[in-house]
Length: 204
Image (tube, rainbow, N blue to C red):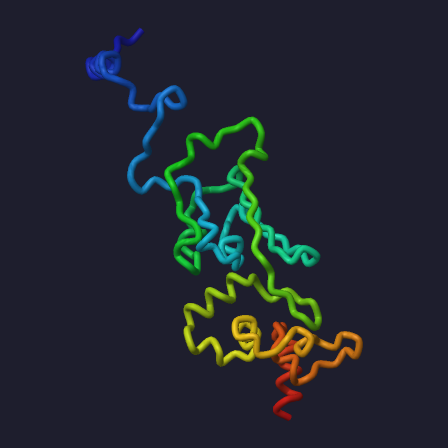
């Protein structure tokens, strides 16, 4: 039998008289170090539902589903799958929609459903073919960022019309029964394909 080395005995004695390096969570609240990457916290006022965070999430913890009947985009965030990599915060187009917090130690649960959060955003749907364009908040964010340049897009005339009421809804209604787009349909929210058809008819 080999006797222990003096260095090993010294380390054993020191470990007996010094406090543990690990925390006493959950008995005692733990404060992580600065820069610790924890649970992503969503700011609904600054999130525009643009799908960017869902596209860059490597663990597919963020998914979305568009409900045409209700006209909303449902964003699902499963923190049980989250890697806390920070990609959602880094690629957020508003820069404020999601921020990583220091919350992680209190995410443990016997029910995984408690770690799932849902968020809804109003959709913009093409008035002619029913295609989903994006969320209303996404369009308004681009309006604000582009400023006057945003009105170079004909689709934005609908947004302007809602504020100034240049035309009534009856005047701007798409004739779905005829299945033919008219010049006045420029004042409706249209997808790129339908908008192209209107432009070809107007400028041809």
